[in-house]
Image 1 (tube, rainbow, N blue to C red):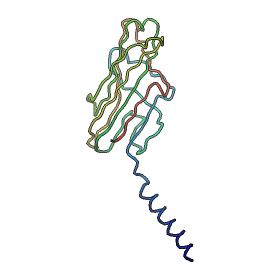
Image 2 (cartoon, rainbow, N blue to C red):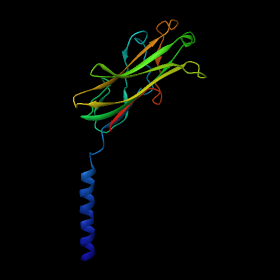
Image 3 (cartoon, rainbow, N blue to C red):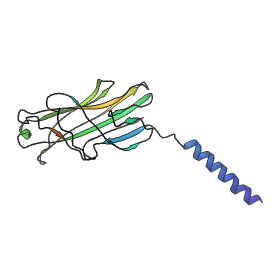
Image 4 (cartoon, rainbow, N blue to C red):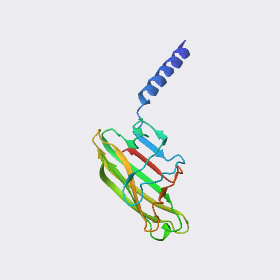
Amino acid sequence: MRGGWTIILACFALAAWSDSRAGHYPAAFYAHKNYERQEGGLDRHYTLVTFPAKKFDTTDAFDVESGAWHPPAGPVHLSAQIFWALNAASERDASFVIKIIKNGGDVCAGIGNPLVGFPGLAVAAVNCDDLSRGDDYYQVVAYGTSAHAAGDLVIDGHPAHSYFSGGTN
């Protein structure tokens, strides 16, 4: 019966190890546009960017309705990228800003311009680190301007082009 006890003990040890590891992933998420373009309200003033789908969310802390991530207390790393679909006229003078905001205030910002060699596209990206108190929330806002766009600035909906992600350090 010595071999049987070894197997039983090994099973208990494996079960205990599995239980101790369960739920101990760091808080992290990746949200994207899910092929939904975002139109309107982007010309000449900051607009909240929506991210209606999640690729993953280890602690269920990203709210797709508000576009906000609510991480636990501690250091966090955040990243966001937005591609804009442009019309031919807006390519001449368009400029863009993307910001990650914390509780409505600026944390970090990145600027973008039309992509050389890729007509009809512009990109802006931002990465930063911050310290969450545990009751904070983070969102993405974007601003675009063009004298020739006539309100025609549209955020591209491809999941790899426009996204918001973050995690605890």
